[in-house]
Amino acid sequence: MKGLPRRRRTNKGRAGKQRVLVTPEGIALPVTVAGRGARVGALILDLIIIFLLMLGTSLALMQIAGGAAQIGQMAQGKGVAAQALQFLIVVWIVAMFLFRNAYFLFFELGPRGATPGKRMTGIRIAARDGGRLTAEMVIARNLLRDIEMFLPIPLIAMAGVDNGMAWLAAAGWLAIFLLFPLFNRDALRAGDVIAGSWVLERPKQKLQAAMTTSEAGSGSGAAERFQFRFEEHELAVYGEFELQALERVLREDRTDAVETVYQTIAEKIGRNDGWGTERRFLSDYYTQLRARLEAGMRMGRRKADKHAE
Image 1 (cartoon, rainbow, N blue to C red):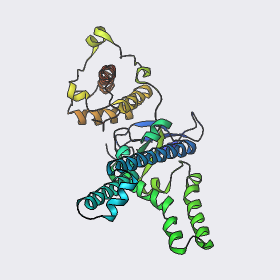
Image 2: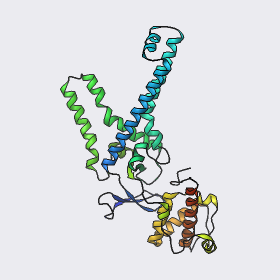
Image 3: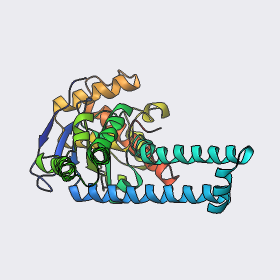
Image 4: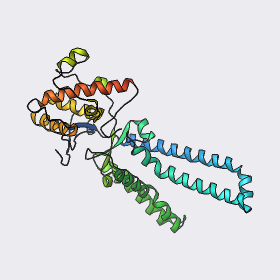
């Protein structure tokens, strides 16, 4: 069942940060919006990492070139030495560009949706519609970061560093965008608004702490009680995120939600043998999916959600 997801506020848990996200599959899932302090801390950590990468690369290329003195001699000369220096300069420019621009794209498009700084502060990027975080979203939010933070620099350069009006305009520009997250309930940057993304706290609950339904169990006794058995390729479709969402549906046990989720999963895995016993179908799928994911975790393999390989 496809459709636009809906979000509504809940008063449970941390006041003002809890949300309920209804995904395109019709599953209601509780999420927690990341705090502004965590987002600032993550950005600072990422900028420090980028600076260290830039510094390390610059020193390494200087070492390859033979040091500052050797670089000066190569710059004044001609022939192979000068060409080698030009090549190293091109490599340095490309590396600096990639560190500044591709760093966020590379990590945020990964299965965890988070840069190293975000992972250290326990937050991640997610799509506000509950779907997959796309390349267009990540590119849009990061391009807007450049506009938010770095556009005043060329303005000051063109007007002159001694131009007070230019500094005032730059300060106003920065203030507008830096204060933007303070004036919306989800602490969204302008880039998040344009891209359709938001920043959430990473769920802290462990998979082992997931519920055990009245039908769920472990061991051979539980296996004998399964009315529905699922093949490996049918269980490989979903990950921990969907397991927790399915847990919520089984806990609430609302007929409309059970039927909607059954239709979604059955269509996804190509099964149609659960009509009339939808809850039992989902319960058996939950138990077997959980067993598969726990086995993978013991082997050092984790599948965060259905988008992860």
